[in-house]
Image (cartoon, rainbow, N blue to C red; front, top):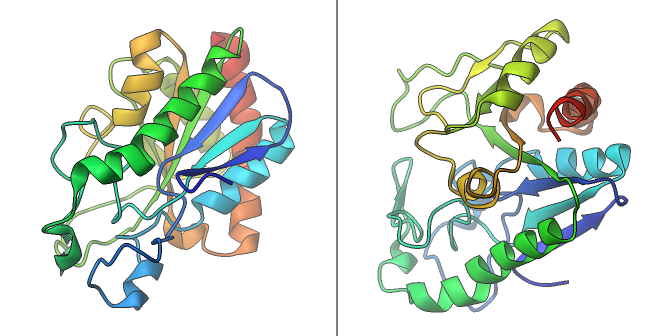
Length: 238
């Protein structure tokens, strides 16, 4: 296993699931200077994403790439020159170990291998479709008045084709769904901008409410809803 990512090999269907923030892992030689309990919090990991992505890979018979380290070690869903690659503050929590960390070393060790592997898998697909999986906390400690109304939000930048197919299907399945708030894929869409939009590859970006996918029942429920939606998007766009 590569420390930058874990690959789930469910089969050879031309769908690739990407989960940038699937892991809370911090390597032994990386000291973030924080209470270890915070690694169970949304600032460190997208809760439920690894499990839902693995379930989807098996159900869809496709591959998934799961980020191998916590977003506090390096944020894989950021451009190479973006602020926040090495967060020194997250939702009111100081991350003192990142203040003097070597950004170049972490990029070479984690960020570059992760994105190179995604690109390599896509190069091997004749007509790929991408699914980007994230989760969100319904309430930020640093901004409790911020409204996050959805069970599942949909993220996109310029290419909203899959979003327009998926939103009514997700609503028909009983989920409260819409364009993600308070931010959209026009702000936070680095991985999909890089691998999908820059290459004309259709994709769906979703963000599940973390408390709804924090246990096995919820994870299976969301995977069961998402699988046919992803297949429908792919059949109409790929």
